[in-house]
Image: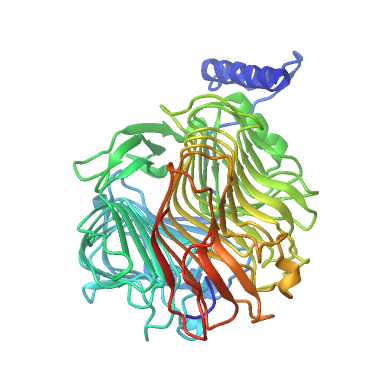
Length: 591
């Protein structure tokens, strides 16, 4: 939010698995590999350095503050810039640090446990660059650090696409900017906040599998799952939606140092999780040495990336912007594709950026996919059409995987993310058709659909999808679940006719298909701000079949400043919004 208040598929999979087996046996000793046609090609090397945009510090590094300040000065207001950075801190204690974090900057500790890397200081996001308004503080992250805030409270005033993961704050956490201007976040996972979290002006927030010393207030939608110390469920007054546990979760893979050797830790799936994964030391999971990764650097092409995956390597994208002229295909089970520093993939000539096969346990994490000027039918596909394999024991996961249509320049895509594989975990995504920046307008950055789920038993935890020309989310799979949904309808609709959906006024933000028998959602909000034509009426925010197995808890719709109105919350249930206020219309349960 930014306003104020088949047979061929089987053969390909077999071939890819064959390469994986070959690579495991030969990778470190043979500089060539065979293709399916028998010719030898140069093998893609694993490992290597992390490139020029990853800055690694230890406690003895001179002038750490100066380097951090230099990067922040470049990135503070570079909302649509092309620079990308990762600030990585080796285990140890760092005194007198105030790391201000700007756009496209990741700050992270390199320990196996957050307590291995301690700042006697702060990791700060504020909104001075935007006159105290934090509703555009996107695309940045803090991970795997312990903070002793100087004032006792750390400030993290962010909006979408700004995860706070695996952090330990030995004090409080303030989620609002200095002066308490608006903010529209946000997401915390696997973190321990010893003191109170103060949202203040934050409009909505989702916290998962964490521990907090208290929670100060709520504006519209504060949702918790698996959080020790979370407030009791009380929606709508206060607007807290609280689940004792998260039914299924897997924490994001992360880079760390084992002595002098870089590795990536891949946490195991948890069921009915509550509290942080690292409370008793090292969590369950697998450590993968860096030499089993293709370390992708700027200038790499899709053909090389695909060859690395077929060869048996994982992918570590260093901070940068990557144009791909063919799809990145990940058809090998358990492949990790991890981006550092908001690594960004732009598909050229209308291709799909990433396709994942109907295989177990692929992990996509830390990536921004930016639509190109030629329309892509899809940007990310998880599983091929009609995927049917059971992945319940080892699902594919998307974590901090973001999509942008326009803003940095013209971009188009018919559907941003399509999930065909069963059991997929979507853990924190912001799928955004731009409403400001460059290259946006009702037809300029045309994007009809945000997320479409065809697979069964898919779970979304922290689903942010905004501004699409038609449906923002469509759900066709059975037994889908969403814990926390944040949406705004497209600001730039020119008139009522442009959004008319047959006899219905507008397209729902979140639609469950009439064929679905079982679906459930918690803590879900849709907001409208039709500033081009404030007379537009949106029939409802949500649409779903009326069946015993379809249930929603804590729904709300909001008219921002009276720019457009909702007639109902879901289907024809719920009172309308009205007038210039921002008081939400609420439905606690459906049906």
